[in-house]
Amino acid sequence: MADPVSQETWSASVLTLFPEMFPGSLGFSLAGKALEEGRWSLETINIRDFGQGKHAQVDDTPSGGGAGMVLKADVLGDAIDAASPAEDARPRLYLSPRGAPLTQERVRQLAEGPGVVLLCGRFEGIDERVIEGRNLEEVSLGDFVLSGGEPAALALLDAVIRLLPGVMGAEASGEDESFEGGLLEYPHYTRPGTWEGKEIPAVLTSGDHGKVAAWRREQSERLTKERRPDLWQKMHKEGRTTD
Ligand code: SAH
Image (tube, rainbow, N blue to C red; front, side):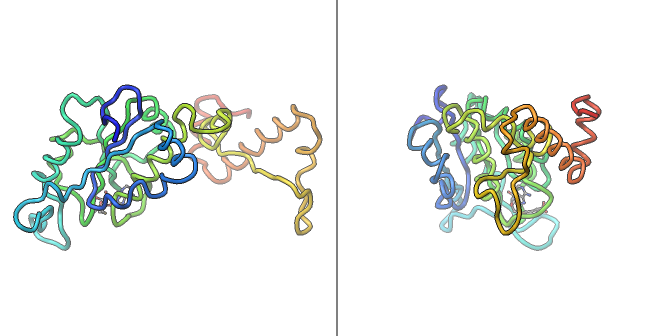
């Protein structure tokens, strides 16, 4: 395993009760190849290893009552300190439905940094005191509730890793994707020219690069207006739209 705070390799440390879930999907395709090539490194820390007593207890009932269990502050504090000592420059993120929704902008910032420390919650979540006590940034995947932070951690890492230098085959393919320019991406087509009576838009086979670019821009704007008026408004305010 590579040094988790190495300057050269972008490194992820994941604190989880289910280390077997990693690298999971990140062991395949672009991310898997990049992991093999040493373009990023992954360390999992089993929270259970910091559990207390004969049963390695990691959780307890919620103070004030109610259903479920809460991951203990003392256990998590020890696990975080082991994974990420005070001098670790990597941001520490807690995957949480209460967090700031993850954006491509934050993903890009993370890719430009030294790596990330991710805490995956389970059950009802974690003791609130850990968030401040260990300077955790809460990040959400969206307005829905997962049963654990692991799928969110995998998704976040997937989004970051594809942006690391040398990971994507054609470097350019990262640039005009959804969100990168503030808009959703235009539609894609490939051969056959006719499929079940549906044609590829003629402009795309015209060979006129200027017209193709204009059509794509138009489509991006149309889709963004229709599907994501929130994004559209933001772009408009920033003066980044054509109308
Ligand atoms: N009781 C909590 C939900 C706990 S879900 C609440 O209502 O806010 C259990 C764990 O799943 C959380 O600790 C968190 O790590 C993870 N999780 C659930 N939904 C998530 C989301 N939308 N984004 C990121 N992580 C999420």
